[in-house]
Length: 117
Image 1: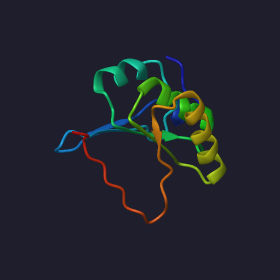
Image 2: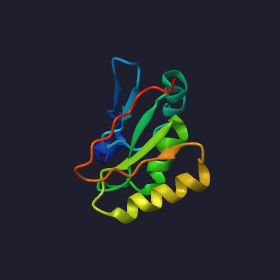
Image 3: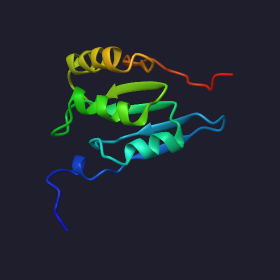
Image 4: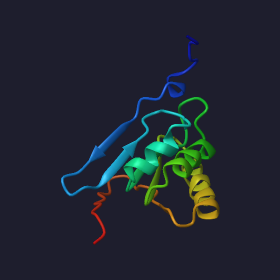
């Protein structure tokens, strides 16, 4: 078995489903991995948190790959010390996945997500 160089290369992720059926996928510090496409198709995520920095090898492009593979309604760039990383992620999303909304969270702001009817 090959040893990974960083925890981001060994995916540990979370699927959270609310009482009203909103599915949130949290990537923790994980990089994109091939099984994400099947997972996204099966689970039909509403919101996906995409790592765009801090952890080694995590970039706006790898965050975009997570969104591209999972195809959520809303993609949220997070885990970065740089607003530039979030902005770059949003630009990639607008260009490559225009049907997926990109939410750049604001500090101390509360967001509510509910299922569309």
